[in-house]
Structures are given as structure tokens and as C-alpha cells.
Length: 436
View 1 (cartoon, helix red, strand yellow):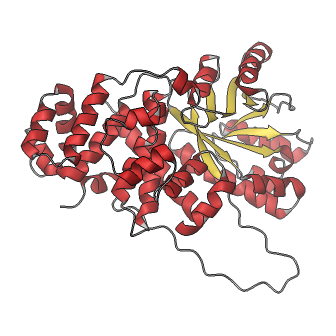
View 2 (view 1 turned 180 degrees about the vertical axis):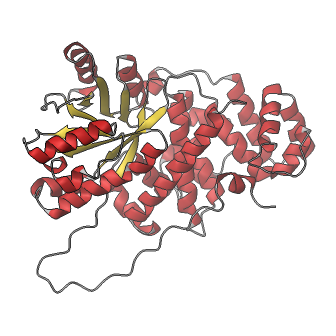
């Protein structure tokens, strides 16, 4: 039987793009310019704890090249690549935020590529030119929002102020939010580069409209540790039952004893996306239709959703699903690494942030493979480089990601797979948010 999840979410994981064969050196004296790329995206958490959109950022090396030759064609090409990458997010109804120099945005070739509805943080001041006035009018009519970092020149018709968490730390950012609320009460406040999910939640509670950074557990996860809830414990027991190869009737009976889980299982297996010819009317039948592998995967997804007691839980769940999907895609190109197992590694690696308990404690009730536990808890073993690569991309640490990506077709190929993973996770998040 073909995988139900494959039918739901687009078939087999894509094979990583093959690395291009090396090209002979060009005879010209000047080295060829790097291909335009936008780097990576990071989720913007909204006031309801959801992924409201994404921050699109050029890689640090690209930013340095742009600063060194801001008037050159390569700088414009990179800016246009970043703006183009924002379009699919905007088309899906989410916010897309990018930060670019005013000197580039003032160039007609770049200004014309700013997509409808984009949020653009401007670095530096616009030079007064006739062509710029036309661009500003066009942007306003197309819903483009302009902003600038605190202390930078405010662009005409600004809609937001941008704050970066830097050396001042979280306390400094929270104080800056208070200052901006007083100085610019009508402007939205966006905070970037926060060190962990606890900091993101505090920034939102302090008045930030959007916050981004490391969507993972910070030091506060240990200080605010919580008891694992009974619903979570129940899911762990069911997962262990599947791993222990218990009889299908026993697993069905255990599921049937939980009314909520029984309802969710029957709703899932009878959904139009699954497309069964005949309706499934019993929990035991649903277990047989799904099979053990798909049942384990479904229960793992529910486990990540069980940690819903914190403000950013919706964003955390979407990040966990995107991480899991990326690991699955990466593993699909390596015969020695099982994609389904790596999908689970991606999910379980965020349990500390979701459940607000240390990872070792969150994983203790689960029977999982040794390579999975080594990767998640010890940051070691054969599966750790894959998880390390996914985390580096989420953190926008492309310097760390690049050598790790070499075994998967290179950094550009992995970033393309990360885009696929985010699109898949967003679609799943929307389907889960739909009313029953």
C-alpha cells in the first residue's frame, strides 16, 4: 500500500539536487561573480504565537560583498534574488520581511522588483531623486511597508521600526521596545536576532508585533521546567507500544480508551486527502489501514502538538514539522539513513522547547533508536550531522552549514530543500488549523 502521508503531502521526498560538475576556469582575469542567492529564511512569530511570516536575509558573506561594491551589478542581483524569494510567502498570505540598503532600493532595476505587500527595512537614507518619488508612490499603492532600524533615518511613510537583539541582550531589547512605543506609538515594532523562544515570547508580551530569532529552547526552558502532562505521557505509551510490536488489537484497544485520540484518528483516516473508497468506522480498522509506520508518524506529530501551554507553541510546532521534513528530504539521498527515522528525529529534537523540560527528560519515556538518542541528546553519532545541518540553517549560520551541506549537493541544494520543507509544514499547519 502506498504511503497515506505521501498522498497527503506530495509523494516521495525529493532527491537532493546533484552537485554540478566543476567548470573549467574562465580565461578572463576577473573571477566570476557569485550566483545571486538570498541566504535563508527565519520564522517571524506573531502576537498569537503563530508563524506570521518569514524574515529573508542575505548571507553574511553576501552582505559584506554588497557593502564593498554597493554600486556594482552583483549587489543589485543579490537584492533582486532576495526580493524574488519573498514572493511565494507573500502569495500564501504571510508577511515577508527583508532588509536592504537605501542605495540599492533607490535603483530602478531593484525598486521595480519589490513585491506587493513586502515589508522592507531600509538601511541608510534615500537620496532625493525624481525616480525614487515614483517608486515610493508605487510601493504605497501596492501595499509595501517600509521601516528602519532604531536610530536609522526613517523612510517616508514608515510603517514599522526594526530592533536587533545585540550586545545589549534581552533586557536592552525590552527597554528599546518601551522607548519605541513612546517615540513611535503608531509604528509596528519588529524584533530580530533573539536568542531563544523564551526571549521571543517576552518580546511579544512587551509589545512587539513580530519577533524572530532562534526558535528553540533557551536557558529559560530549564528554569521554567514543567511536569510532563498526562496527555503527553499517554502518547509516549502508545508510541512505545508501536515500537514494541504489540498486537494490532492491543494498540487499537489502547487508542479506543482515549475518546479524543479515537476521534482524531478516525477524522484523519476518513479525511478526503486520504481518499479511501470506503469509510473506516472503527479504531481497530483505522490502525490496520494506516500500518505501524504511518501510525507511529501520526502519533509523533500529535506528540509535538501536545506541548500547547506556551505562547509560541503554534510557531514551535510548525518549525518542528519543517525541521522533520528537511531531515527526511536529506536522508532520502543517503541509502544508509532511513528517512522515516530522521523525520522522527527532527520532531523529537524540539520537545524541550515544546514541553518546557530538558530533552533527556522529555525523551526518557520513549523507546527510540540509539542513533536518534545520540543525535538529539548527545549531539553525536551517525545522525547528528544531519540534525546539525538543519539547526545551522534555522539559525542562519551558513558558515557552519556550508561544509555540512557538501555531502547533500551543496548549500544551495539544501536551502532549496529547506524551502520545500517550510512549504510542506505551512500546508500542514493550515490543515490542522482548519475547523473539524
